[in-house]
Image (cartoon, rainbow, N blue to C red; front, side, top):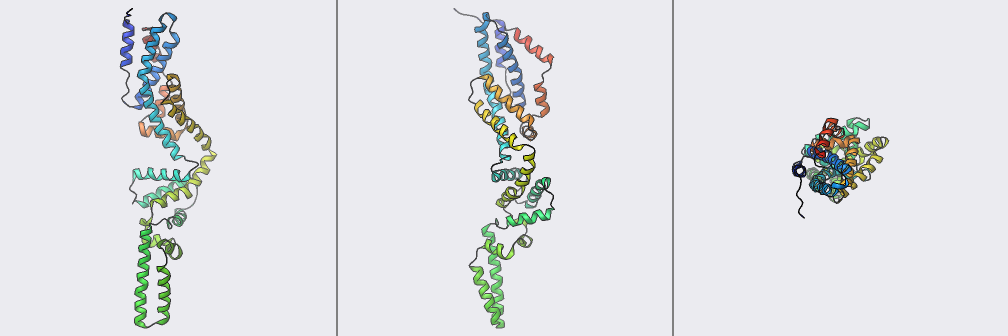
Length: 320
């Protein structure tokens, strides 16, 4: 027996067909909140007589919503992943590496003076020492991370200068000085560049040759060994460990949501993640920065006014 759809069903199908967010998180969330409400309203208010017909409508809504929900989950996964990398509590090196990657997005790496200023600025938020003291600490780390080729050139220059002195000593027939210089040259020629800098030059190498000697690895180690300990000490008191555990759970649930068939569970995972990002201020900054969705936008979506709700309910009653 052929069953023709009613005018109201046709209207609902037209509404469903028009569901679209164009890969815009704010619009996707608006669609989520509207159609989650409409979906549940239809489900809760259907009766036995129209159950079969309504279930087909619900299936049509779910089919249309699934790719939009997956898109929301995907965007939130990126935000959570970024936050977790920047709060890699068990891996200070990964935490430090992420800091450097973020800095490199806003400046060229050869701007080492700015890079050092940024690193000190974050350190200074949590520890009260002068920039010079901090620079001295950093230079202790940086001197062993100087590029080996550059360190070799510094050593070669020093050896050549001793050869010049040796030639002059020979002209003057200064046997004591000749012997002293020959021993010194022999010692240096058996050294590596970094060993020479560590033993004979120390932190003054940066005063002599400039901060262009700073390497990327040096800055990573600086963040890892200097900034991370004071950062973590501060945020541990603020409950960062518990926050990270909650974020990790939400992150895993978002990943599960991509394969979840149940619309209810899919929406539940997204709502929990949205609530977590709302509570974690720094993460909300990431959402705002990446997708231009602010805390006030989420507040507005979470508190739909009665006028809008009555409009949605009126629309859905037409098809039931």
